Length: 614
Image 1 (cartoon, rainbow, N blue to C red):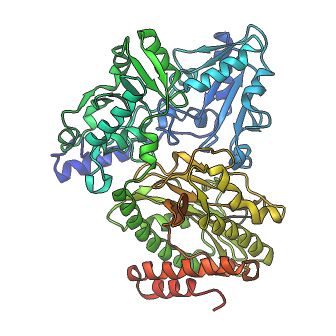
Image 2 (spheres, one colour):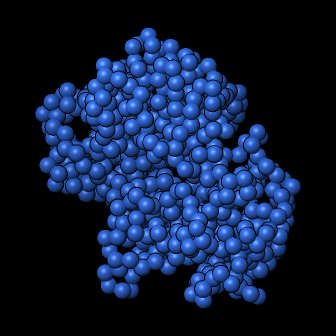
Image 3 (cartoon, helix red, strand yellow):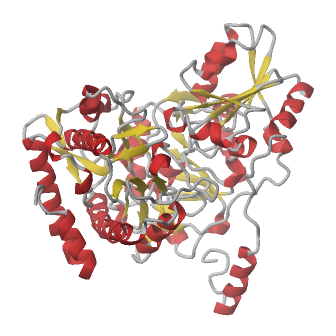
């Protein structure tokens, strides 16, 4: 309403709000008839198979409802997955986070759930098709490199990858939602730390250094960061559906629905940004005819590349010019996110005290609602940055579990409650996981908890040479678990934005990431352990990469402050150095959070941050 009718009276706003509330949400109820309906289209179009990634035109983690094709087709609600539908069978490929969730949410009579590496989807399909077969894909939602990988693999068996003009899932999705409409607002300089014009000028020089005249951006967080704008189109992340072309002189052409603009936005953008309708983006690509244009082949879609090539542009492959500068947070962004984490830490302390008092016997959904209620009291709070994971007992063993009325468990004494949550604030994005001992838990669970904590401390205290990639740090988190013959099937850390994406590239702490860690990057530190049918443990703080006092080295500054559950720790398993780190961490947590708490919440914090053994 701030964009559509800023001058509306209070009564008008109330009537509009009531009308909007009456519009039903899109239905994603599972329906086993959808895959057979898609297979019927494949037979009609003479396609041996069709690829259905969980992806949209912008290659982001969070999709607008219109683009949730995989979820609508299969019922799977996870954040990562890939479906291959053949004329007589179908398979959903997921990673280790979803090996339990995927079969529970899908219908085995129409689709098989498979691990994404056993074998990889490309190899699996190559073994299914034969010479002369045509495999369909949607070039508008498929990155250039991904299309090339599929094309090459299929060519080896004589099959062909074929782009479709219209996604056939859309043809059977009768009530597919339209595009979202949310206000677009400026992100003030006091939070952004650098003016958009300065960012555009700096990145323009990078584009020129690549030998290009322009860069095409389709990743929404890059566009929001570059223009210092925030929106509300995308769930959990303040983004606006759009595309952008940045010239080497720093001028930007932004393809966006201008009806979403709030009154202050045009002046904020200034003369260095030309605004055009979203539907004119194709013409904008054509206008680059004859010019060298840089795109990131891992994220720019095949449709963008094809359009540029057809226009006679020369493609210059390179990274999205925003990604690395965005990951290196400036001092203003770091100061803001530290403040956000202190407020969030106090909110978490209030929440964890509530869990101790009142959560036993209540369901997971009530736990989630209470956390949102507590965080929502902050005037800078702008909602969750992902759906809270509240896993009681055995549900905690499902890495990316999503609670629902059909799946939720009650919080019961004698086991763990895992709560992984995060919030968007105007000055920062938080992500924290705490595993809570509900009542007295068995020693075996405490031992597992302590092994995970040892891995967390090993990462928090790591010192490493400049140029080190996350792959070298990942083993720090696993060493104690490995020595006990245990492990976890996910990465140890991901990048985090500032009032942007909670999962941000390019750096990670994982067995796969070679990207060097650099000062200013914010990453998560979240080792875990999961025993199917019993319990799950994950302990997560956010850290900032900082210069070490030792020349040529880097280390981590922990910026999340919230107690670890001392009741779940087997103190004897900690070394003296680990115990010292934990005592110092808790002492600092007490010092930073106690001014923000009162009464029984303050007393609870004092108990939970006392030195071990006292």
